[in-house]
Image 1: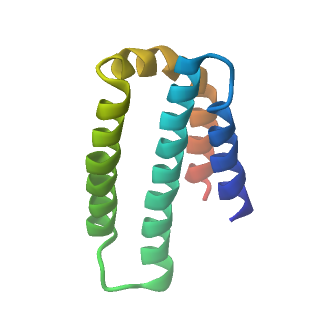
Image 2 (image 1 turned 180 degrees about the horizontal axis):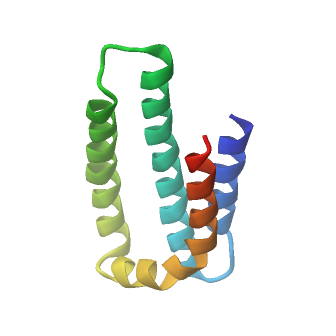
Length: 107
C-alpha cells in the first residue's frame, strides 16, 4: 500500500513541474498510474480472495469506466493537442514502465 501511495504521489508531483504543458501531461500520467494500480488490485483481489466476479469482467469494467470518464475530461480540458503532447512525453516514462513491468512479473 505504501508503494502504491508513493508511486501515485510521485506521478502527481510531476504535475507541479515548470511549464504548463508538462504539468498537464503529468496529470494525465498520474491518472494513468492510478488506473493501472486499480486494475492490478482488482485482479489480485480476485485471485487472492476468490470472489465470484471474474477478474476479466472486473478489469474490463474498470477500463471502460476510466476511458469514458477521463477520455472525456482530457478531450474537453486539453483539446486536440493532448495526443501530440502525450507522444512527446512518453519516452521519459519508458524506464519506469520497464521497472514496473519487471516488478509485476515477480509479483
